[in-house]
Image 1 (tube, helix red, strand yellow):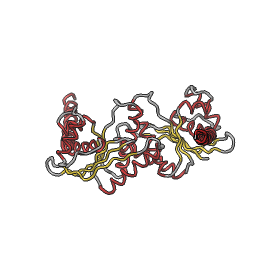
Image 2 (image 1 turned 30 degrees about the vertical axis):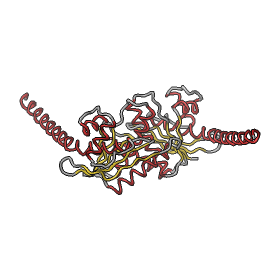
Image 3 (image 1 turned 180 degrees about the horizontal axis):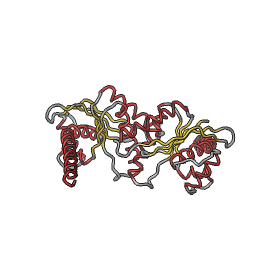
Amino acid sequence: MRVMGVDPGLTRCGLSMVEASSGRKVVALDVDVVRTPANQPLPQRLLAISEVVEHWMDTHRPDVVAIERVFAQQNVSTVMGTAQAGGIVALSAAKRGIEVYFHTPSEVKAAVTGNGRADKSQVTAMITRILQLQTAPKPADAADALALAICHCWRAPMLARMAKAEAAAEEQRKAFAARMKAVAR
Amino acid sequence: MRVMGVDPGLTRCGLSMVEASSGRKVVALDVDVVRTPANQPLPQRLLAISEVVEHWMDTHRPDVVAIERVFAQQNVSTVMGTAQAGGIVALSAAKRGIEVYFHTPSEVKAAVTGNGRADKSQVTAMITRILQLQTAPKPADAADALALAICHCWRAPMLARMAKAEAAAEEQRKAFAARMKAVAR
């Protein structure tokens, strides 16, 4: 499974591409940070991000795109830029029929380090080890994009099991409701 | 000048197309509200909005796209959806080389009614009059998209004058700074 990880942002948008094989083995294929100047008009900034993202999708052909889920903790103008960059990545994936998943920062930290409240240096150290890199990935946006992709590789089997269990439970609920109806008659 | 007005939103995205001629005369050409169900995944919702917006741009060929500027007053999840829908419209315009302008809700109200704090019914009544419509536009998202386009048509000459005045002032500042340097030498 080939996974594209995205740490969305207008000023810096982290991109990564990793390949997951059997077990927990993950290999890094590519990493980049798209930067757009704050004094550029918004449409041009979004276009610049969109062009790099679409080029990545068309050349690396990921099976899945994993994007960081934005939350309200930060200040609103940052949240808006992050939401817009993430939205454009999600749109580019949808146009190509590529599946999109969102993971929260604490899900990413928990998947990579085993601790949902790990700090940046712990996450970076674990990524460097997991991917067997010679040097730690920099800047933070590049490290976060790699962490997101790894998180997805490792959570995907669990998410699939959860979806299957939920579908089975829904079937049982329906069957039981039908049974109740039959009994009441 | 042909202006596309957009009241961005995930659940309801208002679109309008108007043509401005000499003076303050404005004619409505088209209006629509794109609806996407809240239970659909985000990438599919953004794709649905993007497809309608791109179709409008390619068939109506607007000179300018005027989008409502999002602010932080609302709740954060609404702001994020609005920012994402607006971002996708801005991106579609940038891909086609169409100019994008953002106007705040109070700029729109002030332009259309003369009062930046006008309520929805006053705005709708003025739009109905300005566009000489037989019935008032509904729902609010359609009315807002029309108001945005009208606002842009009427503010555009002022914005152009302001940009020209700002450029002239910048020239004067530079010339004066050069003069100061020459005097100090």
